[in-house]
Image 1 (tube, rainbow, N blue to C red):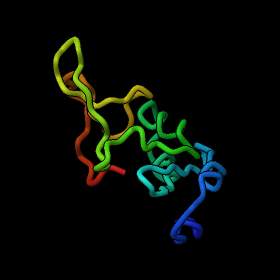
Image 2 (cartoon, rainbow, N blue to C red):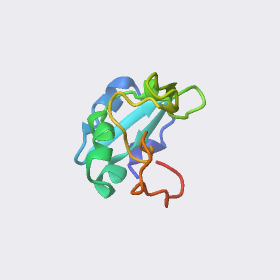
Image 3 (cartoon, rainbow, N blue to C red):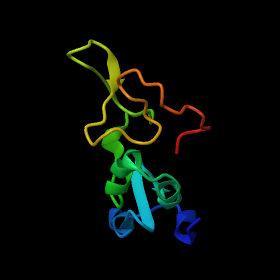
Image 4 (cartoon, rainbow, N blue to C red):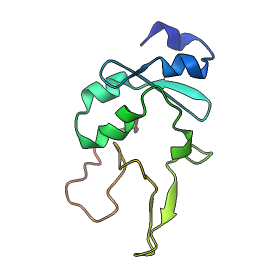
Length: 109
């Protein structure tokens, strides 16, 4: 883990300076800062791209106040789904039934 992450606070400018999706990706959400560099390096592909694109930014708007990914009702199907206008990301199930969604993981990032 990065030494700076032991501090108790970071400014938005400090988080913004860690904006490389390749080797230095921090994000903030709901008042906390997370180093997601290892997560990105361990998970290649389309589902990691929205997280990589958010490097150095605040992603609080992706989550409700409890920290769960926001949801909405799909007007076409009437079914509640995850609200991911930036694209579905790692550990978010597809909105349509799918046989290839892997649920074999402990806690999401």
